[in-house]
Length: 402
Image (cartoon, rainbow, N blue to C red; front, side, top):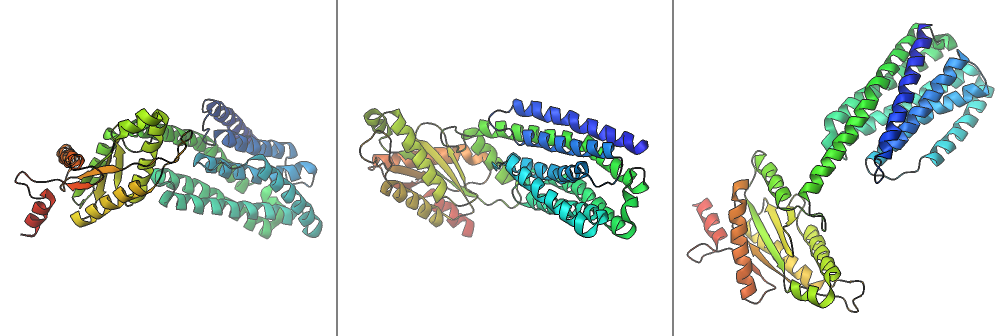
């Protein structure tokens, strides 16, 4: 009776949170973050437990076959939902249907060859392997594709690992004592149902928290990015630079400011759509040229900025020249324009600085160098100079070695 009550409460939790996930997904029409798939996973698992309540214990029937299929299809649905949450557009129904058909045939064959104990042992073993793979994947994700959710990934890994251990114990009990261990009122099954009821209470709100966290991060990212190029805007670049300098042993940095030459002429001659294409093209070349970890931004119009981390002045000048040549040599195909467009950029390089408070001075230096380059004929790289005319970066480097 107690076990039936626990399973009934578990079903109620699963069905309620399934409805909540579905409602949330309806409010996220562009990117549902897998919430609709999580709702399906909850429905499948609730269906499995409802069938288990109706059966009342181990049995060989069509209902039992469906029960086992749903029991394993539910975590597969959760995996597919997690993949969608992290941006992978995977199918839902075809993999689930194929799995249920294959596993249903496997159940029939195992039942015919080895009896009911083997079929239930196969379910426990399959669940153990599935949850073990999920645990390892979640731990791996916390170190790679979900670094920003490291704490949450560890939390989920512990919960999923608990299910893995319980299913492994269930497999051993079936092998050792047959189907008696699976009766609903057995001590082991009581522990299993209590753990699953706990998960049904903890996991859904945790998933909602992840969605809210991702939405908040997305809004923060939108506020820090230029919508046309997805480069940092001034606020985003300043925040990223502050974060870099707050790290221990942060090295001085250099700032590049580049401006598209005769950009107004491009807009006037070919229209603003062509101008936008040029801006996106230069942004892509800037991203491709800088090194991993360097910061890139657009401050409006045709003005771009890059902050080069952990480099000396020679490396920075080489990178700036490589960028200038890349922009000059690569044509831009624009819809509605007969011939590919070509453009050039002028680049100003600041002296090195240390600390986010040096950003404004670095921008002033790079801007002065940039306009000196434009006055000298454009399509060139200019290094900031000190008040007495020498390259500012050289003076700082000389001072550092004296």
